[in-house]
Length: 476
Ligand code: HEM
Image 1 (cartoon, rainbow, N blue to C red):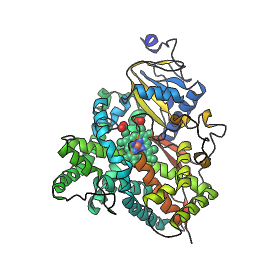
Image 2 (cartoon, protein in one colour; image 1 turned 90 degrees about the vertical axis):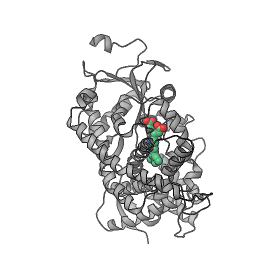
Image 3 (cartoon, rainbow, N blue to C red; image 1 turned 180 degrees about the vertical axis):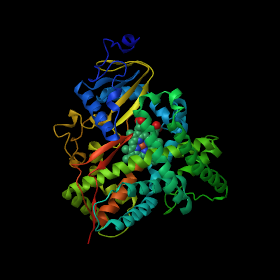
């Protein structure tokens, strides 16, 4: 059985070195999250060395890691389903966009896309300014002290911004989200990562009897008990709310994503209360860890290169003409160098370094075929360092984003927010939220730190965990 199952077909991609009989490469992922990151990086690099596709085995499960841009696009265009590992989160997120089955996803994504268009996002800018000012003010606790871990400040900022704009919460409800919801969701995401590393727990029949499953059920029930009452209360409140006709021109006014979904559910008879909860939980789960990690890396990069930091500061002062005003959507659009720094950091330190798809039909690539009933992994880490970026692919050069013709012609080589139709719905939201926060921080503080000695761990999202502390000095 073993030889038949593992037998390589003539048009199969090469097997990643290090495989053992029966368990395949499973032994290589056992260890802590830093070790897991070393493995993910190694798998990416190995794929790049082997013409952009390799085969990897975790027990009886076949995976392919793809780092060729054309093959990556062919894979995501042929496969929309998420692999069984996303199913670990299915009990919690069910019909949310990340875990939804393809038929539900297609329908719901079409309905939700307008809630994230530029016009709607522009109405969130005032709230993003408020939350950024809170962040800058919270940083005051750290002035003149030892270098500190900025991550929990950024998590609070991201969670507050996303929950304010998605849920339209009162301050009291917001506190519960900041405290209880944040802890529970962080524990739940860590639990999914634990399960991934313990290959024997991939099988439901074993997992369902484990202590991890009991812990998962408890965390899910905590999260539901927080989110459900918020939705039901808003559902009843909304009947009495008089809508402004034009949000775009009304400063400080916006329609939370929850209200947009409740209106859709009334007018078009789509979205049950459970659907809405699953979408909101998904938005929070998909946004806060990714955005806070990306922001941490960007702050570290800015801290490492004083000349970059000065240029960002000068750009901000020029746009705001040295005033202490909030940033308007037009101001933010003018911060082009800051945006180049953000994109270049996200290229080299990508918060989501791999994405995965379920392969249900054989997929023919340039030099090989990926067999059905397997998992395809897009190696974003290596796409971002592909030789097509040029000889300076590994260097931090934000200017490449400002020079026409300096970027590779194939857009798939930049996949920070995924590729294909199932990419990140919150891409513009995330960029706007991070840009507003960074502009406020750099305007107020000088940041010191060094990204070169950091160590990272991987638990779905890549995070710096050692030598990543920064210091802040108030600008005079
Ligand atoms: C820097 C910040 C962010 C990064 C790096 C990021 C990255 C990604 C990536 C790579 C994917 C594709 C995953 C896949 O193909 O399996 C994704 C999907 C998704 N992201 Fe983001 N994201 C960020 C911020 C956000 C924000 C702010 C939101 C919500 C407002 C969000 C909501 C989502 C959702 C709902 C999906 C699933 C989309 C679908 O399947 O249709 N993300 N994100």
